[in-house]
Image (tube, rainbow, N blue to C red; front, side):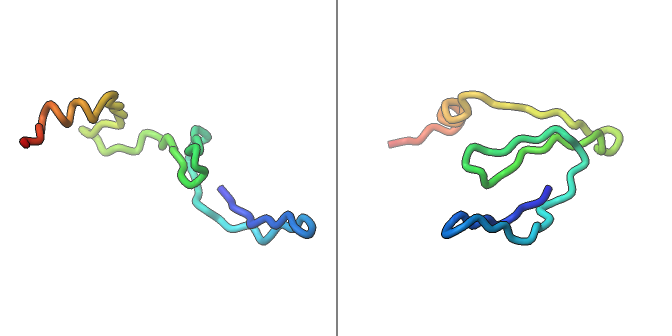
Length: 71
C-alpha cells in the first residue's frame, strides 16, 4: 500500500510515492476518517490459537452492567 502527497493548487502535482505497509491479503477497508485501515491477515496463528474475530455490539451497555458507577 502506497501513499502520495497531492497538491491541487495552483496546479495538480503528485509527490513521491511512499510505502505505507506491505499487506498479505486483498481483504482490507479504510476507516471513514481516512486515517486507519482494517486488514484481514492470512491464517498465521500458532497451533492452538484462534484467528477468530469477535465483535461486541452495545459494549457500553455491557460495561455499565459489569462495572456500575456508584453515586
